[in-house]
Length: 215
Image (cartoon, rainbow, N blue to C red; front, side, top):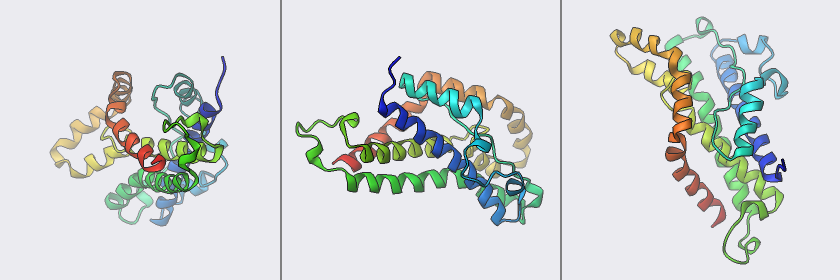
């Protein structure tokens, strides 16, 4: 099977974005007093301690080759809420650190891609990403995967970061039912991906991103 250069670029961009997402959780936890991730050696840019064989290699590779959106993940960074200065507030901020990092990376990569792109790259007026210069392809792919990860992780479904928002606003009487639902969150996510719900929600935002870069 022939694997295109663009497929490899998206695959590498996705792995990098997932790892930076996880590192950000540990960094923010450290700011608030929990050094668990640091002691576990998870505040490193070395990808090896972060890689989950299924979530970081197999699933992203399937998505990159097939062209369908899939769930990708790294090994979760360990956080001990008991070591945080203000457990309820700080855990929320730790959870939001991942999507926030993805959005910041998306913005930076989009600006770089827009500065590198020139309309002369497309003489016919129709832009094919695979025909763009390598630097534009890399920056555009990094912006796109970070937008996807940032939005996806805000879905209010366990174990995604958006579930932390729900847990903070639910009435205390509802929390037992919510916690009973949590183990089934992964099944809901897989169902959402197979049904195509992620694409319906994220594709319009990706189109706006591509318009910003390639106009």
